[in-house]
Structure formats: C-alpha cells, structure tokens
Image (tube, rainbow, N blue to C red):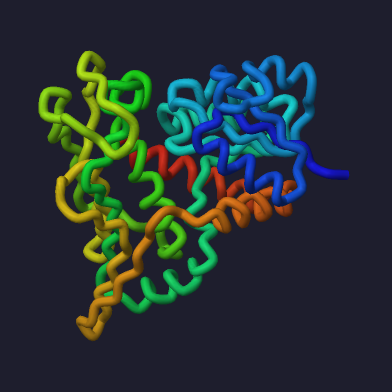
Amino acid sequence: MSKRSLVVGMGIGQLYKTVLEKLGHEVITVDSDISKGAMLPTVESAILSHAPFDTVHICTPNFTHEVIARTVARVSKIVFIEKPGLIDSKCWQCLVEDFPETRFMMVKNNMWRNNIADLLEKANHAKQVHIRWVRKNCIPSPGSWFTTRKLAFGGVSRDLMPHLLSLYIAMNPNWRKETVTGKHSLQLHNLESIDSTEYGTVNPNGTYDVDDRCHLLFGSKWTLVADWRTMKEEDSSIIFIMKDTSVQRFELGWCPEEAYHNMIVDAVSNLNNDVYWKNQFEQDFWIHEKIEKL
C-alpha cells in the first residue's frame, strides 16, 4: 500500500511534492493561494477528505507552524516542520509531549547529504571548522513576514543558522557537551538602506526589525556565521583548518534533493524506533535553545 503525505505550503513545498512523488507516495497539497497549484485551500479540508497521513510537511510562514502541527498531529504518523520549528524550545517540548503517539522532526535536511560521513571525517582531523552561509544580497522579501520579528521570531538566526547548527551536530559527535564561547546577533540593515534583494521583493512600507547577521562559537574549534547581505562575494562553505595548518574547503551550495529524500526515508523507516526519535527531539530542542538566545 502506498503511503499518503500532506504538504502544506507550496513554496519549498513544491520540492517536497516532487521528492514524495518519486518515493511513490500519494501526495495531498494545501495552500491558501490555490494559484500556486495546491489541491486544497485549507488543512481542515485535507483532513476531512484524505486523513490519515503517513507524513506531513509544514512549509508555511513561521508563525503558522504550531497551529498547523497541532491540527494535523492526531491524524499523522510523522510531522516534519520546516526550520526554525516553533517560537522556542518550551513550545517544541510541549508539542511533542502533548501528542506522544505522533513523531515530530524539525527539518534538518543537510544532515542527510550523501557526503556527510566524509565531512565528519574531515572535521575529526581538523583544528578548526568554519561553517559559513554568507549571502551577497539575499534578504528574503524585506518588509514582509520574513523580516517581522513577531511573525518570523527572528531574522537570519532563524532562517539560516538552523542549517548551520544541524551540520555542526552531524560533524561533531560531542555536540551535546560543547559550550557556547561566543555569540552575537546584529541588525545591520533597514528598509531605508535596502533597495534590492535576490529573494522576493522589497516592501518599503513593511517591517524590518530582525537580525541579518549572526555568529556562534563553540569552544575554540567551531565557528558558525550566517549573513543575509554583505554586498560581497557569496560564501556558503565549510572550511577545515587541519592540524598540519593546511586548509580544505567544501562548497555547500543549495541542499541537494537527495538529502530531502534520505531524510524522509530514514524517518519513515525508523517510525517505531523510540531511540531514534528521542535523539531527534534532543537535537531539535537543542537547536531551538541556541537560536532563541541569539
């Protein structure tokens, strides 16, 4: 019997639809804007006509994540919530505890890249590791919900830093024991200074009250930097400074489709593995803790 999946939000949700269909799932799509190609306009209508679901993929604005997750929880086996998850770690813990029969995962797709074992090996032999996602001019739709703190919960710290933290976890077996030795979160831009973006459009009459550059240091080895807009060359990479002082660089680029495929397959195959989901919760709770303090 084929599995049935619900995709809510047809932005990045289009990618999930493609991946799920390749996996042979029956895919139900929802978006309030039907012009984006969704089958249905509301989650409630999808539940009435198609529940239960093997997997649900929540790809909507950040402030809608929790209410959708709670709406689908009782009719879903696994609920994937796009980063940055919920507003804070306490809300994430309450969600997981309130629905003990449902599995929840904040999307950490980069951890399922095919070459993650090689990156782990490089990190193990490195003296320092710099994980960078620095964009030239890519503030997402300045003036929209993306740059409104009460709707997005934060800026680049909620948009890009979760990706870097998941890579950090994947490359550092001791991630639970490491302490934060440095951090900052800054708002360097405002709507008066932003005249363009490569992601969406600028709404000069909107709101911009979020961080657009942040960094985290763990011990003396790990440096994580995220920046939406430097107006310089882009740098999405992992830089390994080896113990012999040589430098090795891995270009991250956009996360490949295979990583989404691997993540979904891995989660579905571990549906009844309590240890697996305990580990997922620990990772998700930890990421929430780190970004909510930036």
